[in-house]
Image (tube, rainbow, N blue to C red; front, side, top):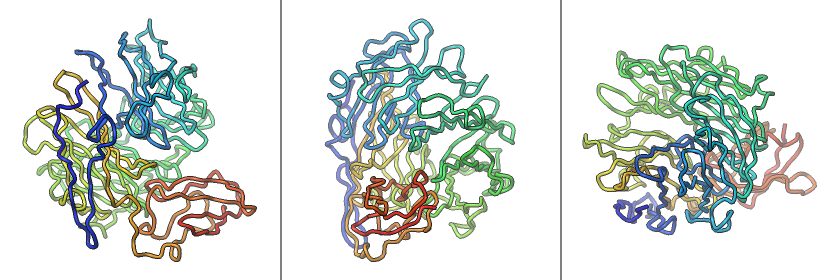
Length: 521
């Protein structure tokens, strides 16, 4: 696997804020050098293998990702035998082979269930115990059935979980995954015949029949030709989807956003009977690309516009109505990003990140690209002075970025992508960037005096009154009234603490050396 024949365009880019200079740069200590980890999806020429992945999106390169530190597991196919046989290879949080895993980084257990049935394997998720659930689809038949197994955390044991029908009589694509604190998981899938499905698996990896009686709930989209283009989940496990259309996108004038409750029912209080229907401009076509929830529970939808081609950001209120205080009557044209093909939108530390590729030259060589915006949709010049960064992986070969996340243990950004290579393989790549704005730089606010939480009493989620006072990955401890530690962790990128699993009672949360009393309702 070649790792040296590429150009890095990120080399210590200096930028300025109103008070001091800061730097965004590639963390050269990550991976195999120059801030990059790379591995091939196809073990030999003329073989195409595309797998589902984790990190709660369909895009991240690791086939299973540790929830705590984002160490990753990938399939090792050095001894390639059809689509079925593989071992897991583990990279640690620094992007280097974890020699303590299995046998010098390779799992002792081997997936070989499909030797006679051509079972193509996919990853589902890693739970909080660092066990890795894997799934197999039997080609060319039984494409609606997952055969599920579980790798132990050390990689040396593989246990069969059984088979589950995901969307009966339909092929499907996993769009998003959410693993709950009890290790149960929601799968959000797009299926044939314009269907969307939510699947609930219990902690053991089988269908949770307490959810809708079958562990599954499916919907048929209202508009003929619609398919699910993006999914996001809020703090209460409600989920939101956008739809695009298999018909010519330029002819679809309306954008649909749907909201469902955690139990799979339609939230009829959202929009009109659960659907927010918006038309940015009369008689012009749009495709919904990504959806995200802001810290103050607004809904951002990134759309691709046609005639002319451009990117538009739309903001909705929590009830699905258009937030006309945003941009121009709820819409904002993203100037400078007209040809940007965004694949994921993430909100991290109250900033908007778009990752994808740019085809500005009009050729078939797609250039990986990142854009950083403030929460109001303005380009944030702290990234590369202009808010936009491009990256060459292999010069002259198509590549793209697919996802970006904040690594909890380092407060650095992992950027996931893939590229064609000179030797004819498809490679996944991971870059790690340091943004000094995320490294706990002290501001001039007396946080211990001003930091407050709301609501109080708390039902499911602890919110903080001002996100400028805290940063993602700040540590917290929750105590009961006897002083026993009940919960210990770090804030995620939404800067919230999830407490729905706590019994009712009185608790204290300690953060930034300040103790705040709250009531769990």
